[in-house]
Image (tube, rainbow, N blue to C red):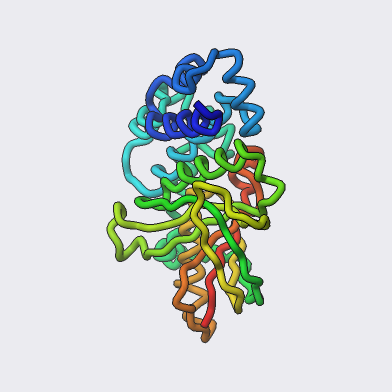
Amino acid sequence: MRYEDRLLRVLTYIHDNPDGDLSLDQLADVAAMSRFHWHRVFHAMTGETCAQAVRRMRLHRAAGRLVREDTPVEVIARDCGYPNPRSFGHAFRTSYGKTPIAFRATGRLDAPVLLHRTGEIKMYPIDIRETDARRAIGLPHKGAYMNIGKTFEAASAMIAARNLWPQCGPMLGLYYDDPDSVAEDDLRSFAGVEWRGEDVPDGFEVVDIAAGRTAVLTFKGPYATLKSGYDTLYGEWLPKSGETPANTPCYEVNLNDPRDTDPDELLTEIYLPLA
């Protein structure tokens, strides 16, 4: 088995079993390697230990559910691998800087209707740029946008396994459908990276992004609350701007790495091509 395949199997297993046994021994079994060697291989290829990756993925899933659902916190905690709500609260607060309940309240306040009711409109910097054409390589994703992290992890694993990062720019995602008008299971997106090499590596799809005038919103904060950036862009800025969107999808560019950046410090640029 190629090391790329071992890594993909383990990352997929983590995403598909957030409430299951994700111990180092279990993940080594999934990778079909010894515990000692798998730990070293995983860390060398991803920059994280297995435990760090498991915690990050579990808490990211929990953060998304906290702001999208009314499910009790203890149920979300259990579903994400934390049967003890106290240990979940401690882990979440350590990573996100807020208790789960406070994070849920903050995320809900990002919704435009609630902002107008309270008079607290959260603004993000937006500017219009002449952007260059980009070529991206990556993998398609179908389903909830909130779950595209699984596909990003797979694309990153393939890039790392082949030592392609020196030929890559930032990670980026394209989102082809409106989640308010398309069923969640049918949403289409793309998880990839800006490609600066020549030949496209096997196993990747290619997306070319045209140059042109683009409105760019810079969002700071957890990926789980990115929707408030889109709501600001479409609900606040666009109607007042006099601009018309081009008939091409929005895309996001990640300016830093969630593996070594606090969620509150994550920077994401949302690009809206203009006609």
